[in-house]
Image (cartoon, rainbow, N blue to C red; front, side, top):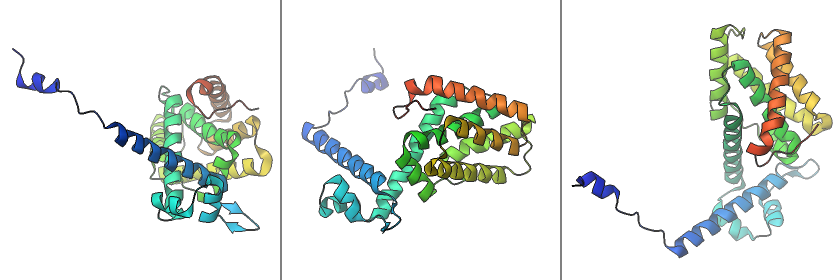
Length: 234
């Protein structure tokens, strides 16, 4: 005889009403459309100042009322977009380095992946560089902190302060993306930046170069099949 618990587990969950589902999916599509439009116009043009809601609704081809139905301000939309992009990068990095155990390889992979997206999607790079949403407490940097801590314990990193090392990496990422925006973007540029960062953390030059090269080969080999936004580049 089935126990009360097993009988309860067989009770089917109530199905979502079709109209409710359609309305929810429509709202989700509009939110995504508005955020895509924010990414297109943000932060604005130097000669015209920062982007405003009028810029967003012009690109999105919606009314001001539609925008306010979803977001009370441009700042809130920008904040949601920043969080969304950060989550995407955490998922991307996880997909490509969760199987790696060597902390140097993990760091080399994460750093190059971040700068690679700025080459592949320039508007993403402009948004990230201007907003500077990276901080030592976000999920991505928690992974980096763990890698630095493990690497320091293993003796592959010469780090006197994990917090300083994390901030150094953040600064290198932002400045690296700015260089890409200014026209320096290439695979060689990204690998040179990654190598310099590893050296600054105490990794021996030959070890750093080997780790960077291996991470780059793996990225360009595996990323096309794992990341929807990845595009080949030299």
